[in-house]
Amino acid sequence: MTANPSLAPAGRAQQRDTRRALPLTLSAESPGTPLSAYLSDARRLVRARLLEHGAVLLRGFDVGGVDGFEAAVRAVSGAPLPYAERSSPRSTIKGQVYTSTDYPPDEEIFLHNENSYQADWPLTLYFHCVQPPDTLGATPLADTRRVYEAIDPAVREEFAARGWMVVRNFSDGFGVPWQQAFDTGDRGEVEAYCARNGVQTEWTADGLRTRARRRAVHRHPVTGETVWFNHLTFFHVTTLSEDVCGALREMYDDTRLPTNTYYGDGSPVPDEVVAHLRSCYRAEQRRFDWQRDDVLLVDNMLSAHAREPFTGPRRIAVAMAEPFSAAVRRSAPSAEVTDVRR
Image 1 (cartoon, helix red, strand yellow):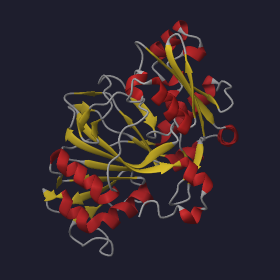
Image 2: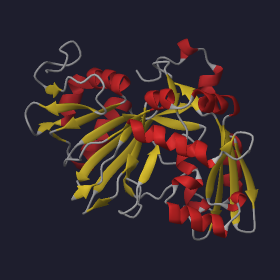
Image 3: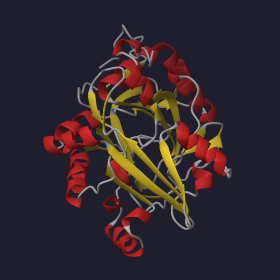
Image 4: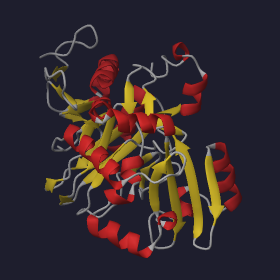
């Protein structure tokens, strides 16, 4: 069906009539239509559908390379954000546009919400398919509203009451070095950043250990909907492949694992609870195959995202926008934050 003429000129894009589509696809009526021209008219439509569905796929447009992709980010969300307090390796393409996570192509990246382990996070994520893979390589999505509803009420209520904690051990040989994670080699700067952001630091013989207690359940700052928004499943050691998980548990006690998650008071989360959470994510996972020049917008609090293994020269550019602080949400009446994504 044609895009809503009250939000964007009719005939400029075609919209699939699927109320629960994830992502919702908006396709160029004329292949090769400049994305910049479409967004100048359809910004309100795109943002409305993003809040409704949690993700919008713009397909069949001429993006205009990395500069055009960044311009699209700015047109919808303002200036893109730097990638701070990193948990995965990325390379800078240009400015604040990055590669997707630089993990080996045969590895899956489990569903997660970007930077949900931090005190601040981006509300909107952007992905641009520069080169689609030969096989698989999708960016699966899961509606965090539906994930929350799928979780056993006793499990989600316990996390709502206790929160969750992530413990990260930065040491040689595993994960991102602390110098790269915090973009500095100065220990004082790391400690100051962590103090500002509710992260405890401890310098150990192996390097740096950090602890951060966060909420597991949030309300979306615009819609007010309850969402399952955290990294506790993603960072738990059992979410790694069985052989990697087993090897790490043989090498380290739990306190020295590269990354692991706990209840907010530091108590262990039973493996079967994490397995249940993984099954809830999996049940809600939706996928699509990338096409060249696709641009995917993701509401970072309404949709978790992942990465399939792949073959071929997959290249996806990523940008983040619209910073949001959990502290603002806690301290401000809801009426004061409803304009956060105008």
